[in-house]
Length: 329
Image (cartoon, rainbow, N blue to C red; front, side, top):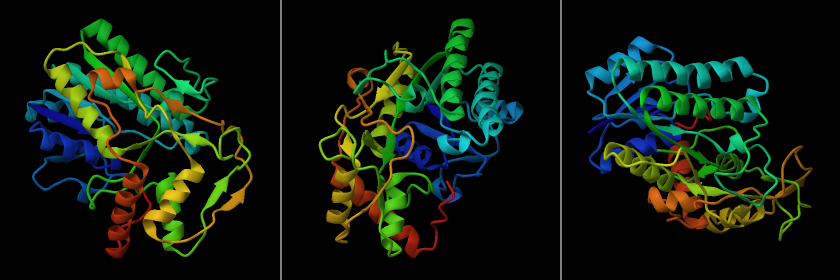
């Protein structure tokens, strides 16, 4: 059983590759390396450098490696930047997904697990987001992910594609010291880089309608996330019917203040975050209900907030010491 992981040299993708290998489900990676890292892919895992926009390359890769199914994580993932770069976002996430589906049809591969996003919900008016919550994306990124889901759904109707889409919020932590979040936009790497650089992290808004005044978000460990991608792939390979979409969420959430407290505790760096004004559009609380995924995809929160911070910190320290952290992905 072989699974192609698009974007498998990225932060989340490399953890999915690791989880597939541990489950004896042979991974193959295709990645343009525009934001991924060759060093994140183990030497024993085949790596094809190229874009999912290249239908012939993807179809050839699927055939050459006798691929069972695809876990699709490749794409442009910066929601804020997507507002300024809508055409790039749509090309990578919409045209890219359409071309991947075309290549899969050409190669007669009919199983797909899609990495979607909580950005499809926009700013929901409920405290606990379920799969039935209205999708009202507010950025080209969120829109492109929702369109990707529609493309996949319609290909399922037209060609019998077996599929599911996984929506998740804030992915954090590390499942291996060699794999870490290199995003210049995500909370954990921003806070950890600030502290290791002798700077004080900021909290944007301290007057939200939450217990401690800071906004509450869903944080999930990347290894838990990867495990459910593998569970979804295995279910499709075994012929089980899955829901069209699943939320991978904690059901509880954590405040930014709680994250900062955990960071101080784990790192041993005593600091008081600076208070900064709210950012426009940030809701008080967004937390997802993961009940359906727990039922079908072995979804559960196996890591505490301290585990999340500790694993991210160890990986960050290793990368910094090795001169590897370029904050590029």
